[in-house]
Structures are given as structure tokens and as C-alpha cells.
Length: 52
Image (cartoon, rainbow, N blue to C red; front, side, top):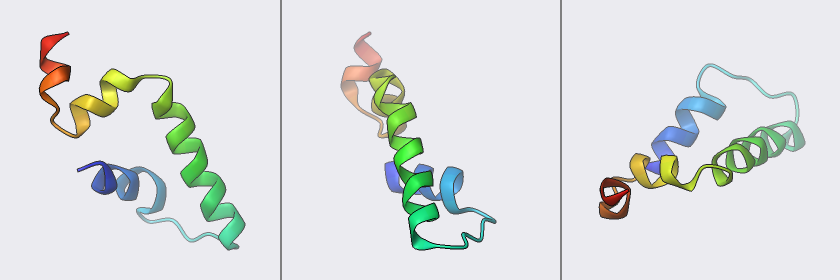
């Protein structure tokens, strides 16, 4: 589920000029989501997300 979310937000309809640009976009995605672990738990359908 998380991979689907990454693809949707990072690569969907995007053409990156370099691999470095693609990697930076992926890093930005994970940096943004690392600041809100509850959102990641919700994306992956974690039971822990339902408890809080």
C-alpha cells in the first residue's frame, strides 16, 4: 500500500530529467511522511493507526 502511495505522489505523470531528480523526489516524499508516522500507519492499514 505504501509503494502505491509513493508511486501516486512521486512518479505519476512525472518525467524526471535525471535519476538524481527522481531520488530527490522520493526522499522528499519520505521526509514529509516521516514527520507524520500516523499518516503512514493509516496508509498501510495498520491496526495501531486505528488505536490512536
